Length: 469
Ligand SMILES: Cc1ncc(COP(=O)(O)O)c(C=O)c1O
Figure 1 (cartoon, rainbow, N blue to C red):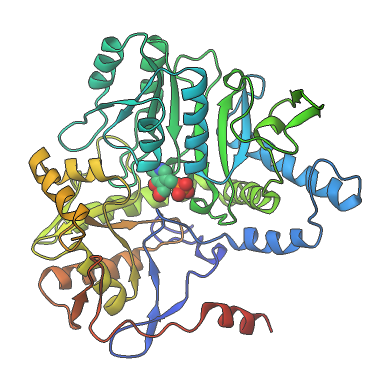
Figure 2 (cartoon, rainbow, N blue to C red; figure 1 turned 90 degrees about the horizontal axis):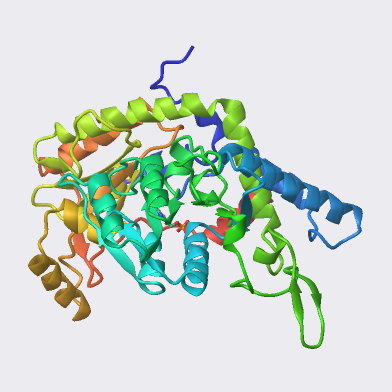
């Protein structure tokens, strides 16, 4: 048996051994530590998409053989998702959407229209789980512990204070900045006790942690769950929204073909769920790809993969925080609560954008830098006070982005290996010691690039066409 650190699932993922050009000429096998942004497809998903293209046709209304086949595959994908998440089909519905942002905006639109009460959010949320609420029903934002964990007491206090005024609690299942896994069932219990529903942004949780929605009569059950296929090895444009069947009333937010039973000259009868929430021609290939990804993860041993990720992640946190001059946001100690294999860090005296550029240019390592679409959380973790944030806001609104605060994020997936982690830790150690070999320039938008430019990338489209020949 392979040790939990070897990442023996690598062969199942497409494009993970790509040679990438590095400073000084030549190439190295690239390391992708940017999985929280998007993951590569599983090879089986890629191949299934190619195979399915041969039989693809429109779903639901066609009588042709291909249409019936495509409809069956599409509905099977829905069943697979329901099974994977523990959805009780009688009380909840699985709706195919574009991704988490789309799903959360859909909930926010309906919530504002049908309920109108405020939404409670935490300071930890990604902008996709913050702005739709802020600009629709309005939100109450609760703070976190000093080191950036969900504060259940603060949530309970806000719910008590807002009794009757809060209709929904929106919380991320796991943070895309620290990897902290939220106590979602405890949050759900609190929400339900105070007459609110709970929505879990599972963009980061679903690919890296088991989710169990639990039956509707369980006080800790999850009312809404949103996720994205491109973060779980099926980057073909589909995601999922799980919602209570009773949530949808009146006309749907998105209207059009497929969502109706009958339309007369002056009347509309809406179709049953899920059709009424899937107006227009759905992304059949994306949904099927997501279904195949789930099936493949379960067949390969999803739980074992997750154990590997956690073990590698624990090493990532402890080894990064042991490097002199490097600080891990949220701390690097062995976690008391579950944490994903994801670490955001800062290097003393070196801009996060410069660290990210050097990792790519000199070591062939892909990471992400900035505030990761979670500005309030990153400001909290960097211990910035209101005055400091307002100063940054002033700079940005007057067009100066060079000193934007932020961090560098490394995020793991099951195909990553301990050898890759060694190379990464070695690279960060060099950078923290001032050991960059190339020189870099910062552009007005704040990004860094090697002086003289990045190695030329061949036209991606031409390369694809050539590969196919
Ligand atoms: C925690 C979290 N929520 C929501 C999103 C938005 O997901 P998408 O861009 O797939 O809609 C992301 C994406 O990075 C995320 O990390």
